[in-house]
Image (cartoon, rainbow, N blue to C red; front, side, top):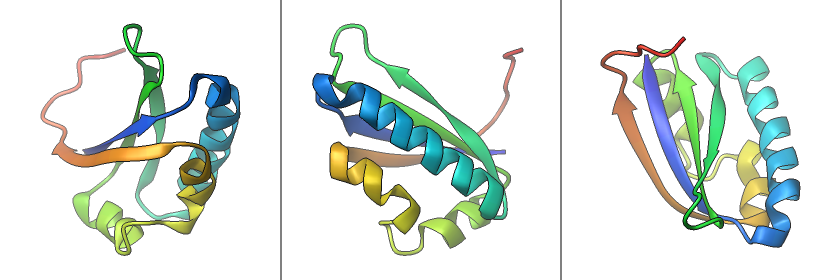
Length: 98
């Protein structure tokens, strides 16, 4: 498996809107892009405008095919609401979550 961590700066007053748009984008990507396995979202307790979205992919190649232009259209509405700070890719070594 393969994970991608996106860091966002989301205005506190736009969080509900961002979450709704993220949910729609995640579902669309999951159902229409080969290798996409969904995502989850984390919000910092200490810095409420800091949000991480962590996407799960079958392979690095699947994600690269989706990410080829660095600004996938399916994520545009998210970028309209929040600032994407960084994107970092990780090989999943082991997952002990339930």
